[in-house]
Length: 188
Ligand SMILES: Cc1cc2nc3c(=O)[nH]c(=O)nc-3n(C[C@H](O)[C@H](O)[C@H](O)COP(=O)(O)O)c2cc1C
Image (cartoon, rainbow, N blue to C red; front, top):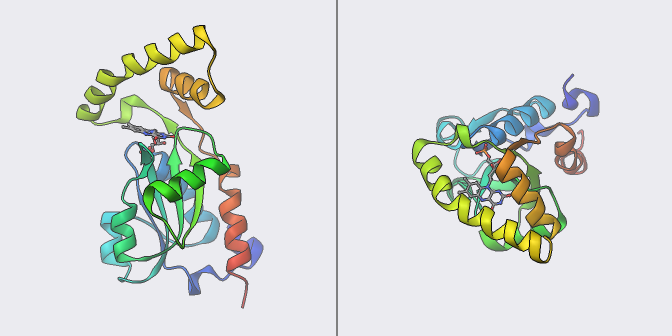
């Protein structure tokens, strides 16, 4: 069932779409899931140009590369970004939303962190080469630190997901976004 029907939301009058950029599919799945839940179409940033007018209101979802929300700057030039969903492999925390806001120069939009996952096999050939070149040093460094003085939760989590991969996409993770929509887009 559609959450729009359950909650009686009137998102269509205020939100023109969900716009996303996804490299390996996790952000795409969140965008499609949210789209079904609130009854608003989801487009890639490329597709959006044909379907959403400049200046229209959107929720932007982008995968995180070194704390940067890929595609956000471009989306913010074209649209009124009401909320940004940053999709990374790490689990969600308040500090991460602060960091995303800082590193991406996000001022007025709401910011959410959604845990996506990590799947090296879905990256492009060149990204796989890049990851394979840098991963061993990172894994070595973290493993050494783990033996010597132990790892912080973040580092332990990153090491495990990096080594084994992971898929954390869920409806539950979208609930803070749904709550924000509920409180901002009331029924007329
Ligand atoms: C080069 C690179 C940098 C990354 N940087 C981060 C990061 O800073 N924080 C994080 O949580 N995940 C990071 N990740 C993991 C991705 O954000 C994660 O796999 C995300 O779910 C990918 O989404 P997508 O499937 O929509 O492309 C990085 C991945 C790559 C390949």
